Image 1 (cartoon, rainbow, N blue to C red):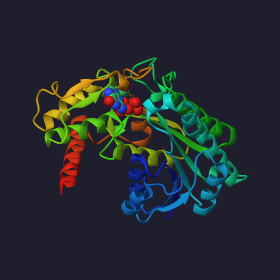
Image 2 (cartoon, helix red, strand yellow):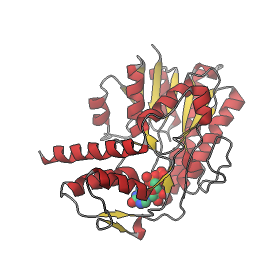
Image 3 (cartoon, rainbow, N blue to C red):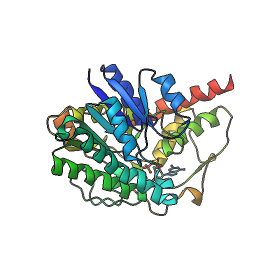
Image 4 (cartoon, rainbow, N blue to C red):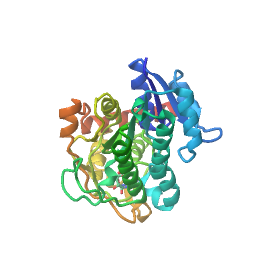
Length: 327
Ligand code: GDP
């Protein structure tokens, strides 16, 4: 039975990945940060078979301990300060965790494995935010990176450090350049979940307004459950490499609003939505759309959930959660 260690196990992707690996018969371990982390309960109730280890990406010795105690075959580095808007307010913290944390984890794996760092297969969660001010469309693995936020810059550092450890030490280290991927488990600060939650609450009369930022930004949105499958596939390859994971379709925030409100029978959402500079960003990533043909050809990966299906499943989940809250 293979063993996996996941950082960021309390996040959307960590939970989906842990479920996937448990279903495949893995022994799954997670790194959990902080004293009395409120998300521990969530992981323990959803995934009682996962073993949790205290650790922090800014503390290499804690990572070494987690590696020693879990003895993994595969390490998935999903931990990060991941909200782009927040990264301007906390640029140094974002850099410590999202950038330097990758180096700390790579170093910990290298030291832990001693003479042969190929013993452990390593996955780095890179991001389409690295493309930022896009230099070509669609974006692929060789597109010039031009990040537009401290978060994006940090992800670029982690991406190149992963490649560097692969080239310097022969580590089986792969970087997945994942475009936005969403689900009912997405944090409510991200735009898709913010919309699905508000639409459900507006429909049920629990909220009357949705305050938004830039409605013209466009994203390539997929379903998180599909994307964790791609992470696993990358580590099953004989040779480590980098892959773009995306749907290849782009939609605006307005498109998301159209479908989400239409799903609850509201054709005109303009009376409910107000724009506020509070939610505008110092620099914006306008349009992202990925070319995942390499992943399709080499990994045999393709997304299974369409954009309208994704919007519908998120709104449905938030309707159910809001009704549950009434009980
Ligand atoms: P990101 O792609 O990782 O930054 O994911 P987000 O879901 O946070 O943002 C996606 C896009 O939605 C960005 O271009 C935001 O500027 C835009 N957006 C517009 N209004 C909002 C809002 O109220 N909240 C968030 N989070 N994003 C918004």
